[in-house]
Length: 174
Image (cartoon, rainbow, N blue to C red; front, side, top):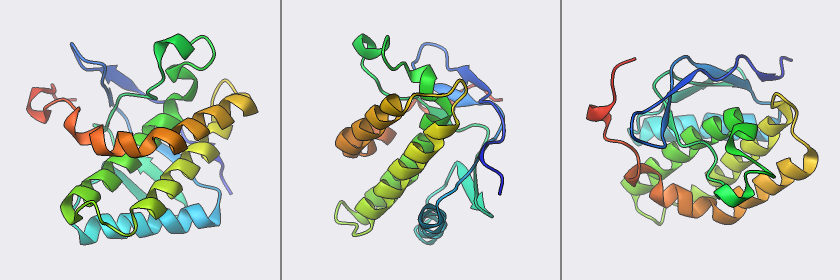
């Protein structure tokens, strides 16, 4: 089975913001069977609830579409000498689009959506797994630290995700 990412992330920064836009698709081959099943379920849920996704999932590969937005990993600047956002750029991008989908479904259904925690855990585990394929390689303690941070603070990010994005009408075409 193919492992890791299929390319580097090709992005451009949106003028006057801390947001970046993917300019070419990015694929990640998911390894864990439970994660593959969870992503397939999330893709189905997004379709059922009419949520537009910036990713698709097929045959064990999640592909993030060109045009997807990311603010990379939200790591306090004081911690950058230890773990900088660019260290986990591609895993953060995949994680961002999954969180975006989870957040949009949650908004459509209400905050009482019963599968929210399940899908958040799947997204966080995909993030953890994908950090094994960073280039250059990321030490295990940095992987663990980043994973623990998303587990501790990710629910806040899901609630805030869509409200802080740039207005789509202000984004120049690719």
